[in-house]
Image 1 (cartoon, rainbow, N blue to C red):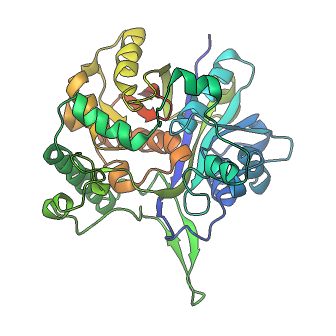
Image 2: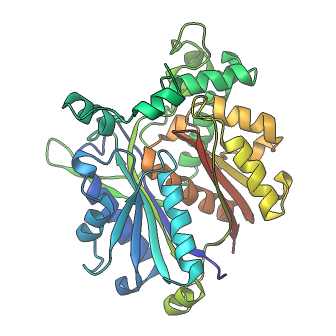
Amino acid sequence: MGEAYIVAAARTAGGKRGGKLKDWHPVDMGAEVINALLDRSKADPNLVEDVICGCVSQVGQQAINVARNAVMASRLPEHVPGTSVDRQCGSSQQSLHFAAQAVMSGSMDAVIAMGIESMTRVPMGASAALPAQNGMGTYMSPHLQAKYPNIQFSQFMGAEMMATKYGLNKDQLDHYGYESHKKAIAATQGGRFKDEIVALEIKAEDGSTSKHTADEGIRFDVSLEGIKGVKLLREGGAITAATSSQICDGASGVLVVNEKGLKALGFKPLARIHHMTVIGGDPVIMLEAPLPATKRALEKAGMKIDDIDLFEVNEAFASVPVAWLQQTHANPERLNVNGGAIALGHPLGASGTKLMTTLLYALKDRGKKWGLQTMCEGGGLANVTIVERL
């Protein structure tokens, strides 16, 4: 089996719902990321053999194979194909796994893995809600309902169930949310995101233009008291909007190659993909799968938790990374060192390669070697990717 290398990584700065990226069509955001990957790797566009794009809400402006549409809107030639992946929040992390598997097998030498999600233009849940509203039914089939009677699959309830199961209280989660913003503020003000972000042009109502280069969701005036004052999502629960990921618009991607692709590029890789895992777990608590997935990934890779220098665990809700820390006994100083989705936003299908981009640049910035990324996903799923910075 061959190796898989990441030679370029890029992401847009996150946009709030109805914020600075509201006028960007998701296909065009994706095309800008593709173009940035070509620029950063100095790759001949003809070397790219496929584009695999994660997207959760594949309806409306993200319908009809958003991957192929992004290819056609980019500088890639028409002969480059594209396919779209839905593994819920892990969609573009799975895109990375598929791309790595393609080049490791030798069936392809250079593949772009990416993600696109405009949660402003295509609201969360639209792919299920719109068909239901138009008489096309629900994904809850009779057999599925028989297996899970009277169950409403809900990530919000899953987050609360995580807090209850692992004995996490609101105070702990509020402190975690506060720290996410503090780390994101420090990273932004320290210029740590500068090299990973693709600047998108924003046009104001008066016709003036500017570049969107900073994640819009960060609360630079954050205070612990303010976070503690946010209303609970459910009476008697522990989760609030301040300890949940932010709705976000964005796109991200990485260029993955094998040894042959490296030689064709003549370009030094950022990292080598060392291990990939994906598992399924309880679809009701739903968000717990990163815990056993991390354990399995480390065992299969022959590594221990302390071997990993930096971790990216998606902050869908604060209860997920806090429970993950509790159960893995990982060093909290190595987790989400530049903040996470609570501060930076979670553009659903784009978050996988977004987190990988941030992880790779954080490893480089700190002179570290090993990184591990995981995230919870709808349906009780989780991907884990372990990379070695080169």
